Length: 286
Length: 273
Picture 1 (tube, each protein chain N blue to C red):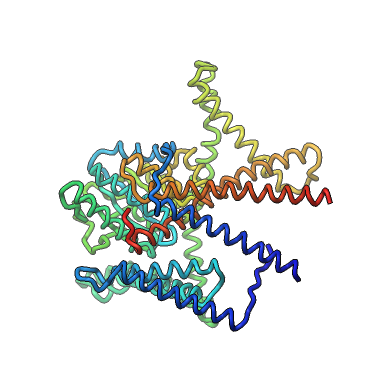
Picture 2 (picture 1 turned 30 degrees about the horizontal axis):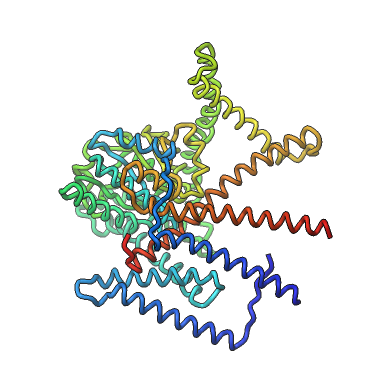
């Protein structure tokens, strides 16, 4: 009984030590305003997506499918912000939609935020229906994408604000997905695979993606097969894009906390393994 | 991992309740001082929203101490709010514009007739799906499911085969094809190394990895001798794959924590960025 209590005490001590250490390495960089000590080079896959977006002519249509909700907001919202900022900076027309109805509020929030910021930067109002389109949510998932591939304005006869898409200036020259110059899916679920199968492969438009870090390794085969033109993986992907855009924001500011936590996790793994090995050799000696 | 046992007793509960009350008062005081929803020119709805979100975030993290009543309340609130929000959005974004309005707010008789023509069958199929809740009439939902599965499979099979099998096969073979085409060109030069040799090496590695991993799960042959070595190689590839996934998962989970910390510091406590 006494041994079990001692074990429990030790377990709780280790548990709380880890919690406190993680909390400290995440919070302290912000509180102490520590600068990022190293310059990180954007990854090749992020650069590819950035270059592809950057090569589009002003007035080109970029479909942004923001398929996530609050649970993945920390990783994907900075990507949405960076991509929208890039669109407005380059004079591209983003067509924003979502397959996740629970993410609709976040989408509206990021569009408003970036449109206001662009208004300050460009000195002119960024208007819905002229400079961007917010289609909102429609049920149907893959069927909706097929429908958009046949007739985009039929699939979304009205935008989020209730404006008719039929004679919308921002959608001039766009009748279906075939007329889209570029698509980017920011997804917390299996939406990227669906967009490739039902969207880009079938209707022939270049597609990029941004995913949560957990999903990023699963996207590698699509990069190798060039079914994806580029990939933003997790918060690091957002930070890379912000660096290329020269607009540091939520992704970049999170990098010091992220890096220090990674160092802590590595140290903890090394310490735990060392303790295991030392314990094993001690038991052998006994 | 030993199961954690907490000593029970009225004294401990009283201490916990006291600490909890103290923390609640501290939280409210800090929130009201920093957010100040009653200040002139303040946006009370936004301030209250931030206070509630910050409170719920802290309550969620209270689970690290142990399961508690506040965590349970927040957990149930999350499920309830998500369902309620989903129901309203389903009405506003799907049922109202696609079912209600075409019939009950049709601008012309022709529009009403078009709705009857195009929407009646899908609506009936949709209603049939709902019959699942009745034991007596649940069998009716099979018609809707049969339609859904038949149509879905017909559309999905060719597209997914093309995207996930044929395109991936082509991508696996492509390095060999380009190597064969460029075999007579500048062999052993720098561009040959990057454009030909390295992709071929990668493709061969993927091939060996795929075979070795599949062999690890092949139990008709005893994993001894040569088969054992192949199987061990498969384990090695699996470990590398799990390691990559684990690394990315840690990164993802830390990002979520960073997101909440950023919210608490910059939005709730209004710390300058």
